[in-house]
Length: 259
Image 1 (tube, rainbow, N blue to C red):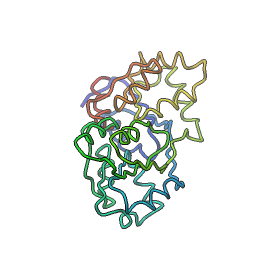
Image 2 (cartoon, one colour):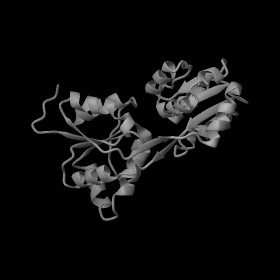
Image 3 (cartoon, rainbow, N blue to C red):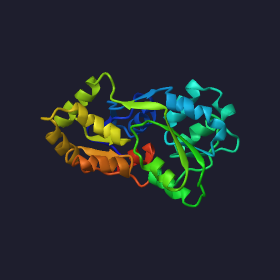
């Protein structure tokens, strides 16, 4: 185990209900987590989600891009497992999402090797989904890559908003984080989605942003969970790194290899 000469502070920007694994790993390395979620996930029973539930028995595929969509559906529709068509196949992005789907008794038929929308679309190239009815519950803040790609393959996609991705109402922790970055009190920071990075800059003032970009590119080790989040950081002018496998554990292991 790596020994640090001084206290090493790692900032975690994940939502509060997704913190445990990251915090545990940071502490296991002997470092100190600084918790400052820049994103809040709010479960919602929208009209589009209700419409998806009504069509549950007609679905050929159901795609979950995060555990949050599964949690949302079973919060509002505890008997969803009985409503879904028994021949409906389940695809998930990421092992954590697959594990939760299995816990709820849905099973998992497809998990791409590359845990991105692009990776899932690549997996579907070998599957005939022409005229298939595909349910896609998620946040509407997500990219259009997946639904557009599925439709180009001939599928009919039902897009349902199952949760909202918003900036936390209380931004004090984020403001403190920005101050600590600017005063060189943060050694490393992790971003697990584009919005975790985007929201940080929404809270920062115009005067803070240039120096914030400079610090995150030089004195702070900035780690993204994967290429999509890394691209967002690059758009801000930030040099970051990301692991070959897009999981929290791999991201954290990479961080402690490089710090």
